Amino acid sequence: MTMSGLAADVGVSRQTVYNEIGSKPALAAAMVGHELSLFLAAVEESFDAHPEDAVEAIGSAARAVLVLSEQNQLLRAIVTATNGADAELLPLLTTASQDLRGTAASVLGARLARYPIPLDQRHVDMAVDGLVRLVLAHVMQPADSPDETADRIAWISSRLLNLPSP
Image 1 (cartoon, one colour):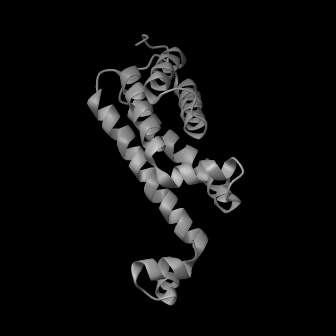
Image 2 (cartoon, rainbow, N blue to C red):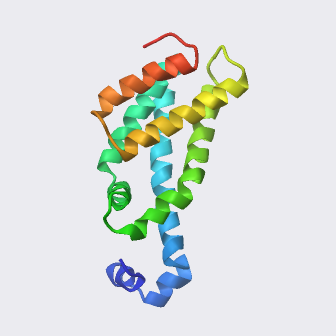
């Protein structure tokens, strides 16, 4: 998509699009940020639904993220780009991945802090990093259904966090 095409689609001038957005990379970053907020909201809802069980909350959050990722057109376009299609979207994933991981890890870490986890903070942080990377790996290359994958992620989380298995 071009900025001119975007302007035409929304019924404004090309200059208005540039004035409001700045550049095509800025637009892409804003779109990725918006999509990330949808995923993080689903994670928050999953934790709210399981206030007494961290493992269930993690499994529910993983399931929600995996289901959303199947339905998300922007994410599917980026994943397709990594598999040899339109390489213009690839930098969205490679340059923003550290920020995305960091943001996701912050949200997950903050939510897990509300549960009694029998580990020191350093080990919790390592587990959070591993879980975020695991979920992102399954977003990028799904292996099974969201339900099956989420169940596996919940089981792995129980091991990483030294909590009872689901």
